[in-house]
Image (cartoon, rainbow, N blue to C red):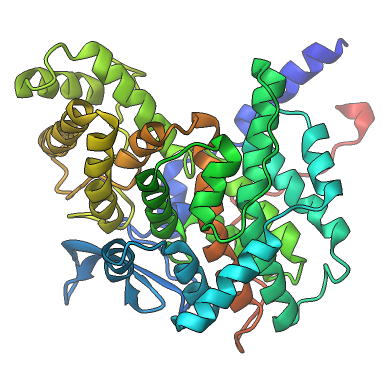
Length: 447
């Protein structure tokens, strides 16, 4: 039997072997995707880190949509973001300190923390050479391999004491920007034949500034402040998002930090989780090309209707960037990002494009509600504006998802540290119901 044919046969067998009737999930009360019937997440743990709020439970049953809120350690992320914007300073490092420690730093503590981040941002020579030698055209894959390589250079890689976990957390937060910048410049050199630039991180720069400097050197102050806001908004999103839950599940086994974080990277790499902003950016370019009059509500509504009916664009029936698993009336991250996106569009001469994106947001929500007519309240999510913002800053699509990881590494580390230190910790092990009948063994001669 030819090997190619055997693979085909095995894949055909797999089609039948993986078929599970939908009615069985209801019969055995299985929460598919860890979702309740009303779409809410199944409660599987407790945390003191992040809280995502998009609805209120109505006594007696049902959900009431409310404006979205996101809390970091009990603090409203809107207050944290607005304070940094108002005071014209960078806020990501302060948020990292808060999420890791559970409290806001004073001026001296924040200054020392910034110095500690800067001290740990440069990579060891072996790590730099490893990134240069790694082959591949996916930065997330290179990031995961680089994190696993860090295990080799850590003399206390398997130590799960609090001191060591905090040291590893700070090193990972510090080194992610450098790894991603170097990996992209290497990819650009290998794939597009461009010059290879390895710029060392600079002292007294924020993480956002240093990343832009290492990636492309030239940037404006508003570029850096907008990127900083994005990092703040994506640093944490509760324990239930897929990548953070992956880190917690993996950490519950007692494995090393680098293995747990690499697992989180693998989760975020999936297009259903970390790649949504790329899909929004691609959709926006398609709409720019296919909507003749960017101010014509009827034309936009007609096109969105055809998209939802799977007639145009990629025929998935989706409008990317609209809707969220928890947020209903609004996503607070989208509202905050939109504020700086407007200023950035003015600086970059993209005001017409921004106005078009705003109108698309309004019409997509209206058309979705009218066509779906399922009683759900939907809003735009942070991805609706993040891809447009990244492009205005001059960042390539190859690093959109790695930038998400660069922010979320803070939340991952905070949740890993919590998972390994709360008193009631246990290895996370849910149950699966087997729905296949027992079968008698048949000797190979009789098959």
